[in-house]
Image 1: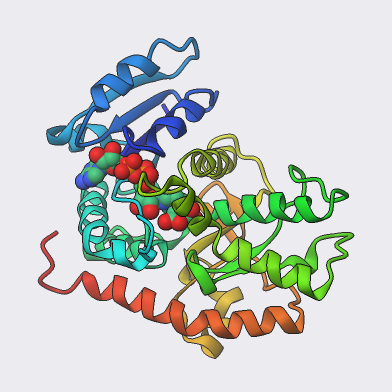
Image 2: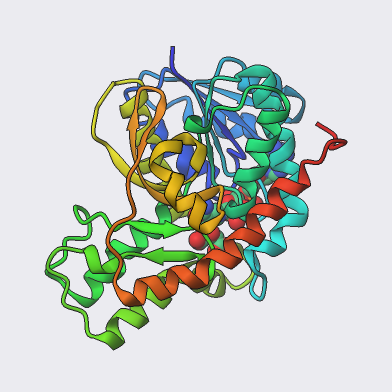
Length: 328
Ligand SMILES: NC(=O)C1=CN([C@@H]2O[C@H](COP(=O)(O)OP(=O)(O)OC[C@H]3O[C@@H](n4cnc5c(N)ncnc54)[C@H](O)[C@@H]3O)[C@@H](O)[C@H]2O)C=CC1
Ligand SMILES: O=C([O-])CC(=O)C(=O)O
């Protein structure tokens, strides 16, 4: 039995993500949890002729939705409106993610937890702290989904240089998932021939790709379809590695560096960061290896230098939200 639960399944991301995951041969049970309309979305999706069973779970049914899940994907929470930063979402989303993490600790403590809800740089530490409080934290199994930054990098690079195949070119994106904390390592794209101006414009567009969508949607939310694509891509990688046992799969993702203490010891000593987005190789248990940082150009070194202080503030804010007397 491979049960995948989506929390926030009736939302802008949740619905297309559920649709994409309904295509997966590796999922036997797709559980859709939301505080509104989960039953309707589940009934609709359940008519699609693939093998997985679909169940819908409303507000009072979180425990059943999460019970024995193999993987939990979390796009629950509010999206941005124009003029907001991702950090502005903390006020509402921190509490939502905290309560879902407590539900995971209780109902599926062994699950792989894939977090989409923003601000990812803070919501991932929140989930980890809650799981720690319940004594069930496994750093190899908690991931911030930063795949949309990777997807945008390949697509935007292709728009400048058509020789780069947008589907097969995987760009490493390190740091975090907001503004200057997003550091695309474009120097490592094979055959890249960007001018300095192109490189700077491309980097800026990737760092602020989310704002491009927020502005275009003009008050109706942020990226949903491209995020569902990115979320399904990452979830499928996790399932391929953990269920099908496929070796050698690599994606950039925001993780707790305790997932691979040996290979990250030097980086942690230098930066004092406990979380970072970096290329990860996956295995049966989740993180198999956090790969060493790729060689960075001088420009990318500067970007990393700018990312670290903001990342640190975001991480501390998330972890500090789960205090000793936090209601979990
Ligand atoms: N990691 C990334 O790259 C990206 C992250 N996001 C983030 O994803 C989140 C969701 O975005 P959208 O789907 O566009 O928002 P949305 O508002 O369309 O959907 C969110 C869903 O979460 C549900 N929800 C709220 N509280 C809940 C709770 N306690 N338990 C279960 N479900 C709950 C809502 O009822 C709603 O259906 C936002 O925080 C957004 O910033 C969005 C795009 C990219
Ligand atoms: O920009 C936002 O608020 C949503 C997001 O994380 C993205 O599109 O990268």
